[in-house]
Amino acid sequence: MQGRADRQATNAPDSWYGEERIMVPTNPGRVVDLRSDTVTKPTPEMRRAMAEAEVGDDVFMEDPTVARLEALAAERLGKEAGLFVTSGTQGNQISLMAHTQRGDEIILDDNCHIFNYEVAALAVLSAVQARGLRGRNGILDPADVRDAIRPPNIHHPKDSLICLESTHNRGGGSIYPIETLRQIRRIADEHGLAVHLDGARLFNACVASGVPAKDVAAQADSVTFCLSKGLAAPVGAVVTGNRAFVDKARRARKMLGGGMRQAGVIAAAGIVALETMVDRLREDHDNARVLADGLAELPGIKIDLGSVQTNIVIFDMERKELDAAGLVLKLAGHGVKCFAVGPNRIRMVTHKDVDRAGILYALETLRTILR
Image 1 (tube, rainbow, N blue to C red):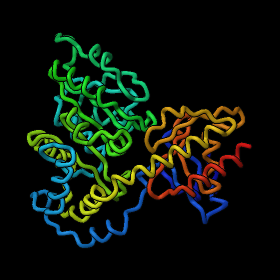
Image 2: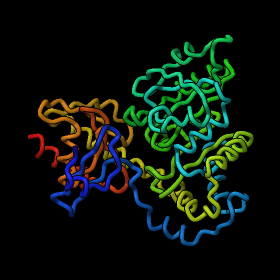
Image 3: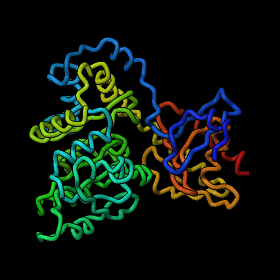
Image 4: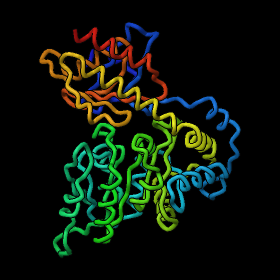
């Protein structure tokens, strides 16, 4: 059990793996938060835009700032329409609700966010069954997708949707190759299935790969992307698709209590995020590479450098005397925050609020602990 002092000292959310213990930093003046790019703070330009935003009642579709954000997002992805939602999870789940009927089956990677980190919402909200496939760092083989589609049979659920994720969170920020997306799109079309792309970090994938967002989005019927991760807006995500799909998604959003009224106050930050924060994601990728290369030189750490494609770095501990939770605890004592995502596995995520000096400090702290 966690001691009273540890409990009082923690102000972090639960770890993805078991119970996370956070110590009071011994160097409280220096905090390097590598838990997630969700911890990013809005920029001064975002704060100004939020303060000055023109607003209306968005449930009545009268908020001009929300409408501008939705149109901008749709244009960036080459879709007919967009819908501003509270989070990527809400965006994914209303997409499932719009695409499927109760009792359907959806095909996805068994390590994807929709299956692992959305509180079984696919079963609770859409009443669909998940057919989990094992991808390579989260990337499905098109042949496996084809083989998973069930033929019509009274005993089988109806396959109606394929869900993909790029970049892939548990895959270490891996990117779906555009040709793989195209192959899965063709398979879906051949069998009458829709495709949904969980693009929470879509722009990380596009910046790293050089493939335009419109080309990626063209391979899916619906795409969700987050504004509140690497793009640094404080709240929200956008769901995009054709107008008929977005109409269904809007109704599902209302069912889930997602009508936000004068939401232009937060949508304004999303506009700034799309207009000013996409290209700078390269800095996060560069910092992730420096972090990964430094980790590879440390004793007792195993990392696949080839898997580090964007801003997520996942590595394994190979020391009997120190597991992932123990290292997370020691790092927190020096002001370096990260997550244990398995008994011996740790995730670190770079973002705009951790500069190169912060990365080097994290590496030096690790060297001190592990030597």
